[in-house]
Length: 106
Length: 419
Image (tube, rainbow over all chains, first blue to last red; front, side, top):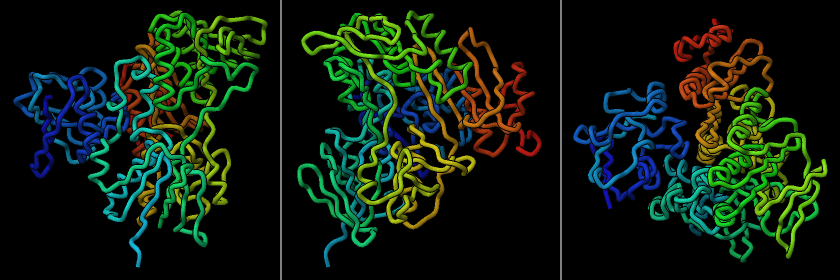
């Protein structure tokens, strides 16, 4: 079972088990990771699951799609090169150990 | 002195869960009991008429929090028990509730997040097997199993639930008929141009959409439905009938508490019922329009459940945080993603942007020149721009919005200039 590591603003890391196929947002919300809200349930409609992908994983995670791109532009937290909506990142075996940083606000 | 009974939250779905989480977020450390009549931990309802109905997903994937996380938050989750009666001690806030199996739940504070139930079809034959409703995970599971080998599916009701279920059934290869009594689809929520778009889009994908048509009875054999009889005399074969004709808020417990109700439990912007000691949130409520503060609206959405629950939790801990969030909503049908921001009620003008026939467009709604809302089909940028404008109290002028060469987000201006 792959693990996803969520890094809070203060640097605290929390590793949680994820199922292959589900989104990083779903993993976060179900496990009560503070700062990832996912209000729309993963429908790319709310931009409340914004994360910054750890640089080691940016290639394997890939870039935002068009719809996601529009939402990221209008989100609350600062958009960076590593910004993604975590509902649009499906967990794979290759992403085991994925580190994502949670932004200050959603 | 006895230990505190804490907060009782009746209704363990999106709103109830959020009240619990927000209470903890606000630093409330007293006991919280979350009681629900379904035999499941709180889960996301919207996928039930979308991806979950199509198959593949397990209910655990839809959990809003794992039971372990809830336990870690000190939330006592009671599932599979319906609260039958509730009473306040001397007007509250404390009191006692009793479940159908006789469990007594004492509380210091009460939140009603009891939701709504599907309106039942009341024509002859409506109780036959194969006539399905879609509200709970168990409903969706049963429908999923029936639908997988159904040749013909008849959907009664052309609202969001019905159209989403129709899209799933059609995608799975069934012959699908949608029967709508009024003259257009999703008439309560969108402008005629959007209704007509969905009629055409479903028709293009092979669904038989019948508007202005009443169902008079459901026929069948051995207790099982096999035909739907319409007011024009037509008989439509049906292996499965899906009824999506709206919901009725659950107000029985509110009545027991003498709370005002008017098509839902009446609450103010702080989620307080007519007894300010009791809060209510989610589909069971009617509230002032969150943007204008006027009138009374019933909003059946995840967004409202969450926003109102936050207001309710704030009220319970003695803070005043109004539910003034911009309402938003979405619906997935086939490859069409509809996103709605704001509330279009009372609009006097619509501006259509984009390519309706090409299935990528948005409709912006105005009243007296002020931006009220937008419906966006496969146009998330337009949706998000309107949502952001409304959240900032800004606007986008109707004249400017009609120019599709410019992205809406470039057109957001302060209300005073745009109006």
